Image (tube, rainbow, N blue to C red; front, side, top):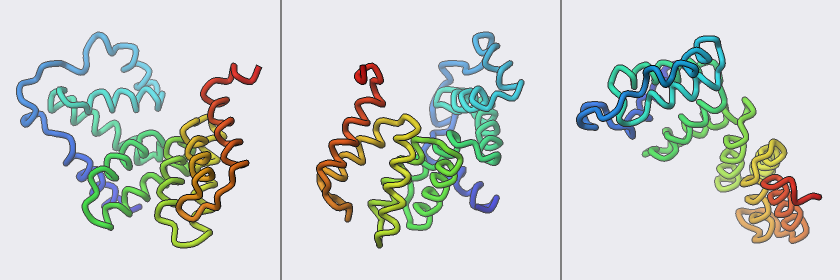
Length: 196
């Protein structure tokens, strides 16, 4: 994805987040003494802390300066290919896509997140591929991504596979045995104590 496409995606994402002026009077501050440890972890290079801080600062109700800082943090992480940040951006874009080009851009961002190993993105990409499949290869890749997300401990992906196989939807051949196995996997992923 080119830098221009990425900046376009960020601009689209901003359309769904009201500006500080539109949000009315500021009712909270999103930074300060309570964030000291989070700020320190983010400055030390902890990308998960940076993602959390960027998301926190970018939320509605934060000042314009805080939201801009949050956006800068999230932009830097997305440019580095940080899976959770790409997933958040792709998901926002999918919810607001108005044209096939915008939807394709959002899907590409979700794909980048999945390729970075983010399980929720893998599951979403799998579902998108299956629902938009034009041939068996697309469906097989969708099932692959759902399986990969389940292997990483995302129970919703295993449950989605169970449902697909149980109902035989979107070109996936009905297979009650596979449906039962994926349902059991989803339960075990959600509660590993069930195995004992």
